[in-house]
Image 1: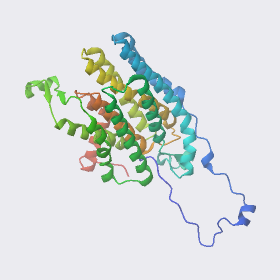
Image 2: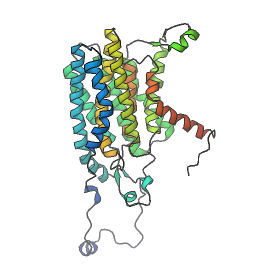
Image 3: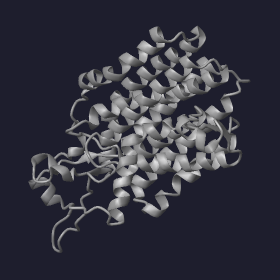
Image 4: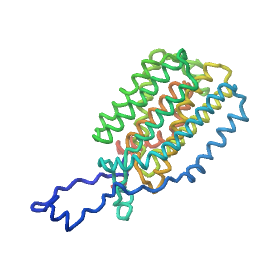
Length: 363
């Protein structure tokens, strides 16, 4: 993240007494600030913001579309468990923040340099809590929706394996500060369980303006489709990680994209008559709802002024989760790319900066 900086450890000067009994008696050691509580969660603010997309989302579920009762029941059960995950995230972040500070996982907000807030140690890598709660919620949901002979169970567990793998790799990046050339390869490794377990369609729907040029409405890519899935996983994880550095930006864009994916899924379920197509989009909802709920819990602490940093753990976790939701939800339209429109713009600007096509005035 660009908005944090770890202070360097300075060795004590020669001749300075360190841990001497006399100095300990005469000058009592001040209490470490790692036990100081972080700012309270902005739950009310997050609730007001979430109403912007929750109201139209539940309107589509209950009133606009006639969704089968069994499918609606599964979506609502997932939503209730996700709500529990939200409160679990809000409860666990203050506790985990103390441990992060004790282990030296903190940063300084360089965007507040020169102000009193700029010298405060901000715990980071709190995306580990979000990912952990998400996995617990997703695993608990299996007991309500999947049976041992379910066709989706293998792909569901493969998806959770890829997400867990990517979350752990993100935490390794936070601790070891992995170079960028290695970061580009991490998602390709984490996506392997999903690629091996995927047994869905390999077709894409050509956008209507391009049908006259291609001559087909539906194109079967065959094995190339798995290459597309692999590249999509790499793009999603790194795009969230690149577009970062401002309080609330990483989590905020994740919330916006996740809300767009949920509404898109409900619209596709309501407009389709194909049971398998509906189940694919419902599968995407089962993954995105818990991610949205836990991300909102993190956003309540990461909203400006941020009291925690999310770390690369969260950006990799969120990117892989949305990639998995798009792949297993079988977004055959360009909808997945449109959902990442803000990120696409940031990546395009970054490419222009790197190639000196646009002058960059940042120092």
